[in-house]
Image (cartoon, rainbow, N blue to C red):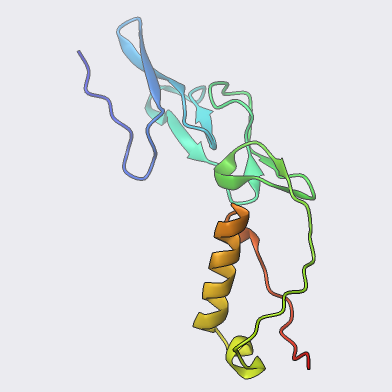
Length: 134
């Protein structure tokens, strides 16, 4: 038997197969490029950089590619279309200074609550302007 495990920092999903008495890396987790064609000692799962994706993590000929425009490639996974939506939100009970302060905890809480209600990742939301409406 073997005790092969994923190295620290690499999520579960690596697959090793015994071939002719040696273990060969056959598959990597989503978002990782399989490198097993450079010699026995150099087998690895190479993590795609931010803004890149890979279609097949079990094919050493498949490489990390840049995420196409107007898409998001979370954690190296396949591109998902991004739709830009501009929203005007009226918030009562706060001053403009409070909401436009750098790293405003009040604004952060409002954005977090909006993301939760819309069932979207809070990281996909941006605030471009805080203005005062009478």
